[in-house]
Image 1 (cartoon, rainbow, N blue to C red):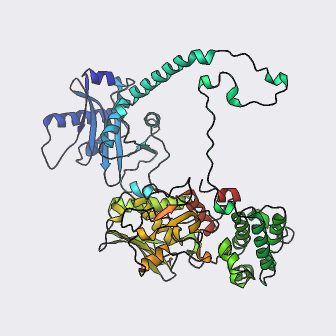
Image 2 (cartoon, rainbow, N blue to C red):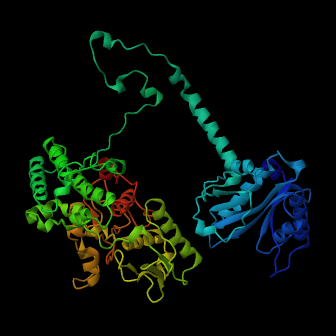
Image 3 (spheres, rainbow, N blue to C red):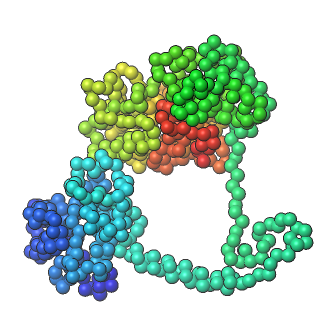
Length: 580
């Protein structure tokens, strides 16, 4: 088909009816011919229905013309605000099939669509068409959020919804020739190296002479065939991993002894008995208690603060997971406070261990955040919000149902601030006062970094503070307020840059994360294009807002830990290395 196009034997035209301007006689004749092709090839489709869509001004048809007659085509409708095209009919005259027309026709439509900013195809395929669409790159794994297309496309009984993601950098009509050329280049490179590859070297004799090991790169022939030693990239050690072991052990011992003598700590002093509570270990997969922590401390297990904090937090999270909210055990765990323990302020501030004892009042009940989206948002802006909500739901136990006043006491209304272009805001957590707002300035969701902005505010709604206000911020980030236009008297400076008390940190035992959507970029409130936030880690850079298009791995784990999501259990290594 491609060769025939190059010889001028076939042509491709995008046709469509119109109510606003005259349509040429030739175009109408071709549309009639396409109607005939679709009717003959798609026998299950009523002719009246085919006529309705082929001649509908909202639909267009890509036609393959041979000798002045249509021999195939794709009828489609584009939804620019939704970012996708729906393929309605696709057929080639039976006598012209198995000649590559179908593939070349689809490639033309892909190029036509990417040139207009469309990155997704959706279609409902019957059992006979699924094979064809799979060959064209379609899959039944739908990558588009359902709210984006629901109510827009036509659904067919007994058919399978299929999706194809388009890449703007590809020229699909040239794709096969590019791949062919690449294969030729690879084949030529292999041919050029064949002599070195086929060369036979004598075996190593050094081991017979008593040598036990040799460097890999000293083996004859390895470098000639392209082997290179693996580069070893060493991460700069995190501050908490280089603390004095004796100091850590002494402080951990002090904390454990203080918890041990607390009046409410008696349920957590030793492992839960499987005889007394037979189903405990069916639900709790990672049990923890004070006695086990003492044993681990003696064996030198707690080489970092995070390992200790993780176990301490697990004691209380296990309690909340197993027991009902109204039980005595929940009251006991909620009444344990660091301020009641005999621990110095230095230990509290230095090790930030209050995080293990956080009592959460701002969590949304039943992991549910009812919401309403203001009518002032465009379809594109609304879809951006839907995608962010869907990402949170897919990676946690959080759900965002539409608000229903008969069942929901508290809810969020997401509004477009028509008075301010460049601000966004949200309350931290659930207000427990009925309605609360998330505000987006009227230009915020049209900017390149809109994905970051939406996710940042939604995590505020869930109860998370800005990452640069973490108690341990100054270990990881330098703050240069001289480059900021915030004044010392500004409330905004107090809100966005002041360090939290450890007990307020919603990240629990999650490491500092330079990729978190809750961390500003290097230039917040900047006045001279000099950075306000600078990483202290040589191998870490603060990601820009446009680079944070989705939640980081640490963000996802933090949500699940904060809300104690059922089934979301992480070992120490996963938590401590989530930023890698």
